Image 1 (tube, chains in turn green, purple):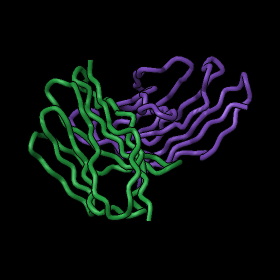
Image 2 (image 1 turned 180 degrees about the vertical axis):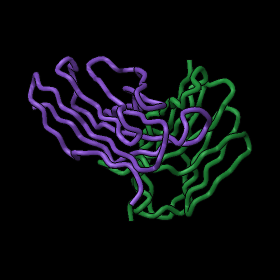
Image 3 (image 1 turned 90 degrees about the horizontal axis):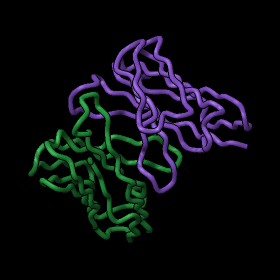
Image 4 (image 1 turned 90 degrees about the vertical axis):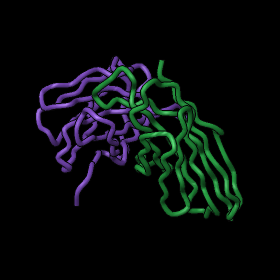
Length: 112
Length: 114
């Protein structure tokens, strides 16, 4: 069964204190891994797609990496505006119609 | 302005009522999806559609219904059969149903049962 697990559930950082979020998955034949940012009361905002182990993508203070079993979202020198819930998702192995399995998310709070 | 719109932003329902949530897109995307989000849980798929006049049940379709009469529109009806409808509802689109490209989300509708 395809599963996506995110850790930690919540993360509290001081401004400038770098950290990493983890997304581990159990799917065979990974066809992509997606990272989203979600602000309270809003829809998820697409951040990155990773397709193969060793791939990295960057956007401002965020950097996403992918291995064969997990993905990391590194937040470098975070600012309060980076506070959000970060979601990862993978396409289901048995599905060809774009259905995704989402993790429960990591809630990040960055304090000044 | 291109994108995905959902309305209303907030919706209140009395016990026994059916309510319809709107989702419209002008991205010319083929596939559309409805998710439900509850605190502490990942997004769960309710229904999805890859083409006009065709849709499939997701993991939690009981108590919900949809239609896809136009490419741009994918309304979701929450019926009185849905026992616990209070949640945040998200509509998403994808350029093509197959393949590994990403889904894009609308702003969401928060439904509360009074």
